[in-house]
Every structure is written in structure tokens, then in C-alpha cells.
Image (cartoon, rainbow, N blue to C red; front, side, top):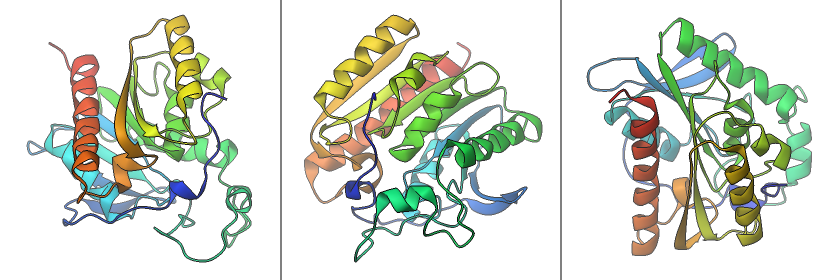
Length: 254
């Protein structure tokens, strides 16, 4: 694997201050959060694929709004069909059982066979209804796998992922577009050896890539980091700017 499976660090962290500005609606049977740029243009879109805390987490919604403020129409779907994991969920929780659908009321799993169609519905909606000319994708933790899986012509044009999880080497080898990665120095899921493997693969595939390593932070910092800690606050803001600049470079016409 280019990154390891999800662990408890994937739903632990801090809730940030601020009020989301976007709206919730339905695309077929999938709830999505959308946010528009100041000029309401949908020419350039960003699809955000969240960590397992999900699209209703206010931190994720605020991040979506920030991408919108930087000139992108943003869509962020419920990847888990109502089965996202609450922030800092107390008590026992088996990640393997969750992935297999053991906690979902209808037993729906959280594997590619279920998640891929959600991603494809959203990409189709962005291309057809919203007429997005280019689509960039952001994947946090769990979502990073699906950025990599769909980074191909006609789907996603540009990809970015922060502290990705559960990416197979074969998936990373299959990308067909530019990919940027924001990595945490302290990350059991995307440790140094996996970063190095990923770098070697990205060199081989030949598309533009970037891997930024942020010191003093742990897995999840891009969404759930402690904003009261200066080093974490800097890394989170810098990783966001990394994504915006990556999209500006590879999506927007000069």
C-alpha cells in the first residue's frame, strides 16, 4: 500500500470556530454541501471528499467555504450515507466493522463498491448541471483514496490530498493528472516509508506532483488540528494554501 488503513486518529481532533455559509441539498439520493465563490461562477469546481467525520462536520464545511472564497464552486458529498463517525466518538469502535457496514442501518459498507458511485454521481452533476469546465478534487484521510482512484481525464483534472489513508500502490500508479500531497511528520497511516514509496511512484507515472511535509503535526491536522497550537495552526493554513495554489496552477487558464 502507498498508505495504510484508517485508525482511531481518523476521527479524533478539535472543532474549530466559525459558521458555515454553504447549503445542504440532494443530488439523487446523496446529500451534498455546496458553496459558491463571490461571483457565483461554476466554471472551476472543487469536489471535497472528506475524512470519516463526514460532510456535516462544521470544520469541513468551513474549509469548503474557504475554497469557494478563493474562486471555486465547491461540492462536498456524504460519502457514508448517513454513517459518518462522530468527532471524538466515545467508547469502543471497530474500524473494520464500520468499513464493512456493520454499523449502518441498511448494512451499507464504506468500500469502493459503495463510495465510487457516490463520487461519480457528484462529478457528473458538476459537469452537467453546473457546467464545470475543470474539476479539482480534495481528499482528506479517507477521501484521499477516492481522489487517487478518480484522477483520470473526464472525471477529475487535478488532485490534492492531505494525510491520505488506505491507498493501494496500484491506485496511485493509475493516476492521469497532477497530484499534490500534504503530509504530517507524525502519521502512523502515512509514515515516512509510505511517503517515499509514493514519491517513487509519482516520479514513475510522470505527471506533476508535490509532497509537502509539515513538522510538528499529526494525522488529521488539515481538518481537525488544534488551532490553539501555533505549529498546528500554521501547518493547517499552509496546507490549505498549498491546495489553492496547486489548483490555480493546474486548473485555471493563464
